[in-house]
Amino acid sequence: MDNQVYAVRNSEELKAVSEQNGNIQVISQLSGKELRSPASRWTIRHLIAYRLLIRPEAAFLPVLRPEHDECPICEEGLFQTVDHVNTRTLVEDSPRNLCGKSDHDLIRLPGGFFWIALARAARNEHVDQVRVHPQRERNQVQRECYVSSASAIPGSSSPLLYSSSFEVDMSDVDEDKHDARRDKPEEVTHFIGKDTDTNMGTDIEVRPRVERKMTTTRIAGAPVSAEDDGGLCQMRRDADGWKMLHPYLALLEAKKAFKQYFADKAGRYMPIVSNQTLAQYLGEAAITWKGNQESLQRGVFLIAATNTFVRFLYFSFGQDYSDYLDAIDGETQMQIVNDERRDPYVYMQSTRWFNLQSGEGRKSALCHILALLKWHEDFAGSNSQGSTYRSEDSGSDGDSMDTDE
Image 1 (tube, rainbow, N blue to C red):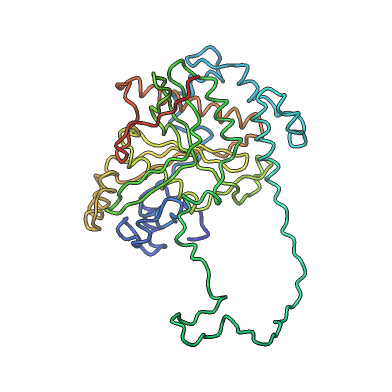
Image 2 (tube, helix red, strand yellow; image 1 turned 60 degrees about the vertical axis):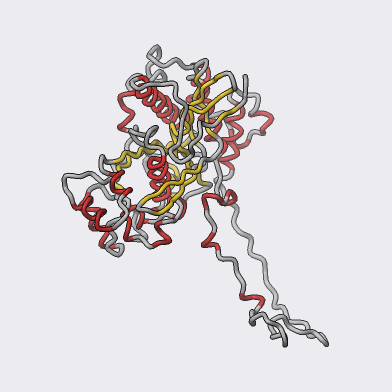
């Protein structure tokens, strides 16, 4: 199963995949190390134990289709108010010879910072081949009175250890805290910023959240954590500056590069999502949802990004999924999953990859972001407003930004 893409759509397929991977069925059957692994270390075993079911890929997220029916980009004059000058800049063709233009030329164009970031990301898609240099054999120099460090030193209390035998154990490195291994595509941040600029209010704004957020919660009795790469948040202006109303309108998970395949229909290379990357998406969504259920009652949106591609995902959770995550012992977990009347699954909707190098790709991404904002706005309108975001683990009022503008 290691080389097969996880595409489980129902309970029967989940059972079959489980049998191919050690017959793992519930979370308690993960090893102690797996139970406590951060989302960045999740594998196909977590996909199975956390009971992910995947819906067919769609051109537009099904959950957002009602909101897209009122899209001001596709139908001018509808509910949402946008800056059509800015949006036309985004959805029209890219500047000619984008990758060949200098930053000096691009900055002069409307939306210049976005075009600079996009051009840099597009150039980085071409990875130079690793140079192979000829090697020569090196002989050890023999010197009088030289004592090798590999030799035992009489009277030393230290055990014999060859100097070349030491190596760093990278298994203890938490990839969620290892910034050097992760990268936030700048063009995605600029694109989201341009999108949200078109839909701003006076005292409440939607902004790109550039800082990462860590969520730590308990699942099956074990502490587990996930850290995103930023996302979309809602801010409110008050006397002290700006405070965060909702940090999780959408999560952002960015990678420098994926493996790619050539799509005949599109006529270009498209990213391939590995099972490990899919597991990380699930981990970030499930852990963030578990730690912030009050503000994420209806599910979690995640924007996946790599190079110049973006993709939108939506995770919804069965009515018994919270009970399943809270169950500490395997017997209780098995009772929940074996009860046909219960729904201990997490469901994932996803779009295809949109290439921000094309006007069509940028338009599709823009339509999704506007629909996503309206989805949250409609839900907030039917509930009481005015309370600042509060995490169940933090015990503090939302983040404050003293940025009077």
